[in-house]
Amino acid sequence: MRSSISSSESLRKSGRREDPPLRAVPVGPWRRIAVLSLTVFVAALAVWEGYWRSEWFVPSYRNSDGLWTLTHDRIDREGPGGTVIVGSSRVLFDLNLEAWRDETGAVPIQLALEGTGARPFLTHLAQDTAFSGLVVVGVTPPLFFPSEPGLRTAILDYHRDESPSQRVSQLLSMTFLEPYLAFYDPDTALFTVLARQTFWPDREGKEPSFPKVRKLSLTRRTRQNDMWNKVELDPEYRKIAQDTWLAFLRAPRPPPPPPEELERQFEALLEAVAADVRRIRERGGEVVFVRAPSSGPFFEAENHGFPRERTWDPLLQATDAVGIHFQDHADLQDVDLPEWSHIRAQDTDRFTRALIGHLRTALAERGTPRKELAP
Image 1: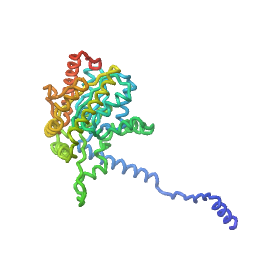
Image 2: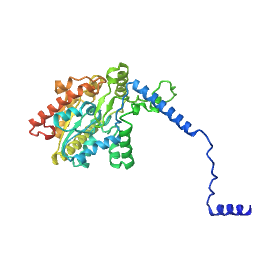
Image 3: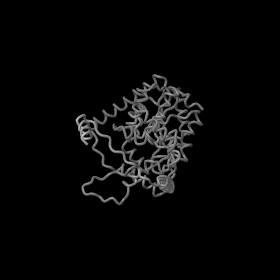
Image 4: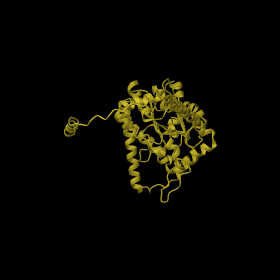
């Protein structure tokens, strides 16, 4: 007894802890419990997957920072040439990469991002890479011309700082989950689903929130994005998408700066874009600008807030670049935009081939044809 007390006292004074007593695992039907647990898990997973498939969801790749980084890596892996696409969701949805490959022999590197302007990525290509191919810049006026960079510019930091564990996680997800599970989509996340339910009571004093943009597309491994057919074929779901855009278009905006300050900011923007274009040209590359279609309230708001003669035309003049505007070509207007901002998947093949034809013609007329667009 004294020896035990003395030993405990010594452990206490030395700061070491006694090992906890071992507890024997009780005898039980553990194999049956494991089988039952696995059965319940698989059944629940099947029910959840089946529900979302009944809601038109199908397996597709997540348009994640990791997938963007893997796509960006092609610039280093394939050399300084080729074609890179930067911009927002219009050139992400509207350009068909398979049609581009059929026309030119190569799949372009698709780096466009939804809700994000092209300018930070054009600067990145000009200043942080040795890229010397063709850069296709999508110009969505509300995202290209304001000073705010947009939703996903932090992806450049992710690309620079990506850890080995993040890379492995991305590869595992793309190999074992994304190609097979329809519910593995940000729009079906449990708390995302709960947050958009109508049963939550309104709290007094709560500021109104904008509706979240719902799922609009299916993403392939190449970052080819096709409009989800539910947007086109389901009138109720299409109205959800349209109402979301209307909420953004009608949202109150802060008062603009004085005209002279606004003009100074715009001139600085043009100078910065022109400087990036010059850097790429000095390495043997070229930059072209594309104004993809919009319609309905979207087109009206863009035409009012960013008139072509005060935004698009000065941009082309400052950069001395080829620009393809959908209003100038009948074959770029003959497309269906179910929610006013993106071309339906069935029309992207024809739109892409027509756009490539106009780019070839415009560059040839300038005396600067590009091998990246050679048939």
